[in-house]
Image 1 (cartoon, rainbow, N blue to C red):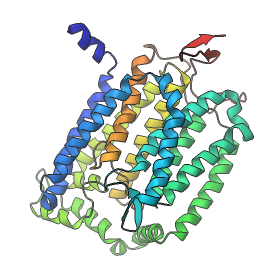
Image 2 (tube, rainbow, N blue to C red; image 1 turned 90 degrees about the horizontal axis):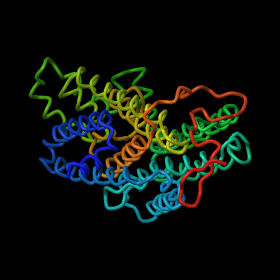
Image 3 (cartoon, one colour; image 1 turned 30 degrees about the horizontal axis):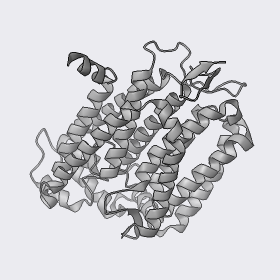
Image 4 (cartoon, helix red, strand yellow; image 1 turned 45 degrees about the vertical axis):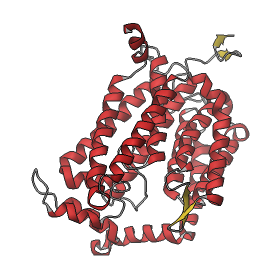
Length: 395
């Protein structure tokens, strides 16, 4: 029994799991606090169920060897694209958007995980050809444009931004040509701005936020109530009126959970949450730098980018630093697909950490790369080829 337990726990990265456990625990309490006055314990119990499902998925993904993910990259991406197309045709029509099946299953959350796995596999297979326009940039732009376009059509601009950021981070770290990437970035930003201009819902959000910067009294109602909710915090114990005031903030348990943290735990609690995400990012980057192969390192970079960018967008929305995005706070906000997909990403990191060498490479860095167009992270597998069983062998 001791040997079995030791074998099962050998792959666990305890610093990463400790941070994750604290986030989930705080998130459950905050979801209960934010939703109780409107829904009782309904959302809290649902969130517990989703956390349980997510932890099960995390355990499974942590046990799957990296070379299996490389083999499954194409099927996973195909399923993600079918889901994104299917939700446009058969999804739930809510508030002028089609983003979910059955009210809680969001294909765009699977798309984040699919982009991490597929783009990492594709970049790792390209090597030095990644810096070539025809072999690297153009196929990458077509793929990311297809995925982002399907998400924008829902419409869901903020998730499209997260997906694009994940892909670009992997592409850049893998060894893409910076000048080409900057050119495509400029073109992409201009096209994205045009799409935002043509979308009444997205444009109204941006306009409302911009008007608020000039005159705080013109802030959109939900943002104004969220800010007022945080300002009512006084001392160690929140004012009793804060609890009833939570009813005025729509989606406080998901899109504005960070504001609820401020209402219940004050500035110290919000700073503690930010520190938790900083610690999570630091640990995830450590896993990327010590990865046993190039593909695993790129996957770790993709998952890290995904979690941190989404957290930054949520926090920025809650404190009105950026327009409303609708992105949940990873591992904390209420949501089924987001919780399961995020924990699946952590499972990938746990599997990578288990298979990594104990000693960090002295050459591990995120330098901008040299003239040889090489990767910007160490590639322990360079100079080797993969046999039929997925094992790397020297040439």
